[in-house]
Length: 311
Image 1 (cartoon, rainbow, N blue to C red):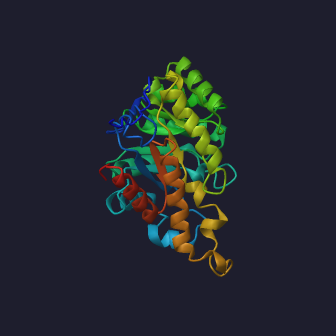
Image 2: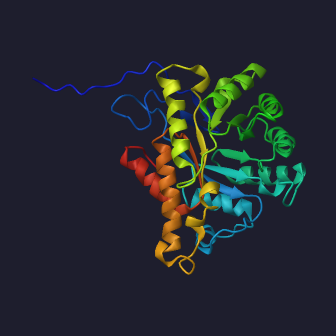
Image 3: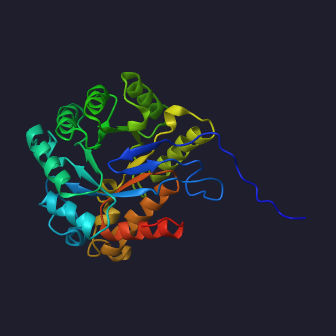
């Protein structure tokens, strides 16, 4: 008697969302379950670029990246040398508790980076809801029609950011604190404003390996199960994981052998910390990975190649 491999049937589908000239989403199966369905588009890797030189990063990371004081040159290297599918410009300088740069300065940085690359651009604010609302509205206007992704839109500022995205033709990354129901509610609120559901990404607020990864993983799995098995239209948006910034603030990725000799080579450890975090999120449903170290990006692209995806 011939053996018939059991296969799950799904009645839902993840939406396709256009990011610049690239599409993400479109899955008809759970992540990387290519024996049960299709992943119409390869998950993409965006590389971090900061609008001011990051502080507290280990020497191994800054040396791998080159000049981190020039966001335009940094972005070009990420695309031309490191193979980034997209750029995520982190507007760290706008943080009111830091440099507190104004919207005009942020817009100049965004426009300069956008003009230097030919891949999709993601623009993330500093995480202060009030300041992000002010800055991202201006960013959406200044990049009108370029299909830029702006975020994070959160409960406190989604009205301003979603309205700007609608008016100027952008995509919104809606962020909620690792909770399925809250993610669904934010998507409902943004679509009720009139933002098209194919202009929304879900940002589930992930942590790194050892710092909440397992909780984020399980929530992302539930997101995808709701989309595919329950055919929940408000959970069928692609998922973006802003993981690089989480990895490189952990002590395990940063601390050198002089402080913790038993932990081994910091340069290798940091790369593996980021690559393993990325791998976990790929198999839990990420469509966009925001990463930092070029070698971690290379390893993650190799994993995708093992599943048959072209670089």
